[in-house]
Image (tube, rainbow, N blue to C red; front, side):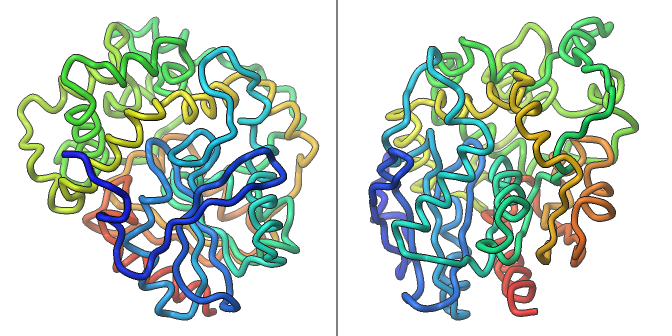
Amino acid sequence: MRAELEDVLPPGIDSRQIETAQGLSMHYLQAGRAGDPVLLLLHGFPELAFSWRKVMPALAEAGYRVIAPDQRGYGRTTGWSTGYEVDLEPYRMPSLVLDQLALLSVLDIKQVHGVVGHDFGSPVAAWCALIRPDVFKRVVMMSAPFGGAPGFGRRVRRDIDAELAELPVPRKHYQWYYSTRPADAEMLNCKQGLERFLAGYYFLKSSLWAANKPQPLAAWDAQSLARMPGYYILPRELTMAESVEQDCRSENLDRLGEWLTEEALGFYCAEFSRTGFQGGLNWYRASTSGRESRSLRLYAGAQIRVPATFIGGSQDWGIYQTPDALETMADRVCLDFRGQHLIDGAGHWVQQEKPDEVAGLLQRFMSQ
């Protein structure tokens, strides 16, 4: 089922488009009143500004002006180069932070009361707070802990994907798979169809899949990573779509309607069938290349000084996919860490699965 944006947005959320100095025509959703403290909500992959629809009305009711953009490479934001043969510089973290600053500038917003990021939006939010604490006064990282800026230590860069290939049952890391040329077409034109693929992907990474029993990993090595499900560490011979279909064969995907309606799934399908996945996949290409880490060493040793917190789902493997990241974030990266909250009955898509709990946690943190 296909759905128009205006048909699936809750009352009180407006859809807007604006040109920015970063060369983007930025699409964003907004709720609340001009003049209220601003909250900036940043989505991850494969999501959209639409992914915040369930928490925006409650935050606006609590007295905030809530802004959620389609980030570079996604949805109705245009001005980014599509395809695989593109310059990756605009998809590196400094540029993604600049995208948010440019949006705030054209909206004449001098300061953000809080920036909130989910999934790949989480490190964007963290870097916003680390680089410009004068603009972003609080930060919430969701589902993906932030391990801080890369340092200058003499560490040998491990070829983790090569190590995974040498396991008795060969595997591959999803981020490296997402960095390959065929990934976009293999998901967009998969055998089961885009709607079933996205339904399966959202289902498996949610609390609905009983096999999700996440726990901390011992180390960043192939043996430890291989404990993760196939949507993170795929069977070597399968595409992501094939891996998802394999794990969904005995599942009732109709249960997805417990937190994602047919109309909402239809909207995701309509948007990604129109844009493809490559814009979002270019974020992974930029982050796995090694070049981004070299440029971000400019901030080696820098810490997040504004109040910070972390929210995730208790059934989300994503919070453990980088060993020790939770502890590093709390103990060393954030100088004013206000605690972590793992919500029972939620998986990776925590703000969609448990919106009331997430909205409540955000309100309490923002009002402290």
